[in-house]
Image 1: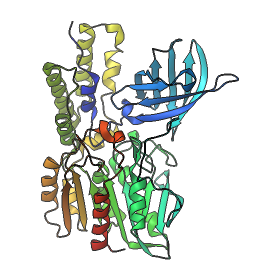
Image 2 (image 1 turned 45 degrees about the vertical axis):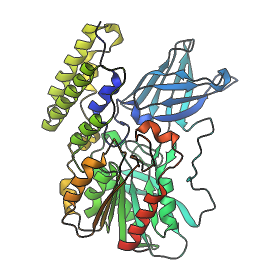
Image 3 (image 1 turned 135 degrees about the horizontal axis):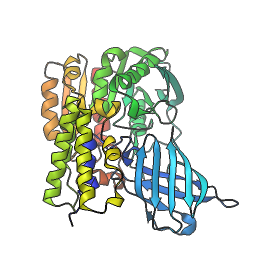
Length: 460
């Protein structure tokens, strides 16, 4: 019997990009640890579920022992999260609504439906993170909020001690649904970055992404013009504060944030831009490159890998031409072929599956975005940094392109740090699977380089 092309190979078709996939039909939207209490009468039971970007996961119920049980059938569609736990007795399943920082749902076991609200975080002690900032801080930390269009944006502002006015940096996170700390694989990247820059004399604004924490909306329904507008609104919020120097507000984007920073720069009145691990090619090309750079699933045959690549290329071609009906036809035919080759009862309706591959505003914006015009238009100091072991935004391909796009800017600096991954951590292979195991959140050399560059071109 013919084997199915492994799901991990198809993730790239939907847009792997700068980080774990984060589109409505992919578990990458919720990847990481979530915990809560199943509200059993008289004895609430703690549970922890960890989702992985490849569609899998695991569940720990401490009252039933320390071992993890596999989670299957993980899905995120139209804001609804579902999964099953087939190895637990009682046909365990979950369905809940993904909201601002929680998944509010129902845990079903042996036919009994019980409330369960999952929130980000683990029940167990996390790994050591030596760079994690801990109070007391030599600066002020303030919970802030402002409006961007018709949504409220929440975040945190750190300001050096003193009267100012201080230069300021607006942080823009990588792809998908991110909190203000850009938390990924138990690393709170933006919290560490904000701490380092504020200690160096710069105010730093970091905000929750749409649909997370204190920010409204839903990122998957949002195109790049609106997301760039959120960045510009953050800069305007800073400009109205007396302790901020309105003429020295700049943008720092990581990954996809490096797409949004140049787009937002004119409306934000940006005085400088810093791009960390940001693609210098369009989103579709970046997706295709990442899929080639990252190793294929070990269980896949060469034929399956090639089939996946052919599907991906055709899918991206149809997105570029705006042929949504062609996308539906492509994937319906593929899923019908899979159902005919194997146990059809294990597949949903091919037409419904195919519909999930039609990109929404956010995914379409990413895949079709060409950063060249906005990068060439930057006439302020720019620093672009890459990691030499980053398979998601490979330096060998992106650094030369970035140098070319910024060649007319006399105050542009482009450099690569050998041995660092996409998060700017010292890495072995650079694969995202390593992120959690690496104690360092951001290599101190990168933090120093960013602060030194700011001192030279902006001044604290």
